[in-house]
Image (tube, rainbow, N blue to C red):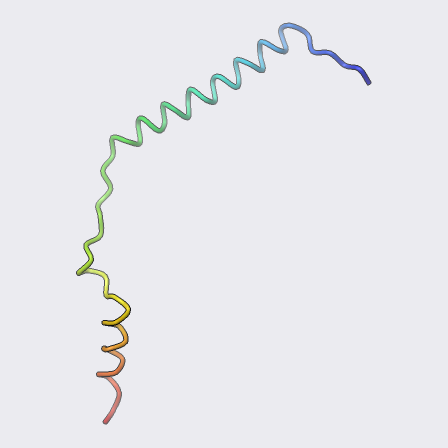
Length: 60
């Protein structure tokens, strides 16, 4: 079970690995141009506000 790769197989494997690395770097550079909207803290209720809202809704 001593199988050796031929030269063209080694070159093909190296080319494929370099292609994957290059494409991932290109994708990261492309995705870096986009600006994602950030969520403001006042839009999201905090845990203390949710608990106080529950307390206010309890019947007296």
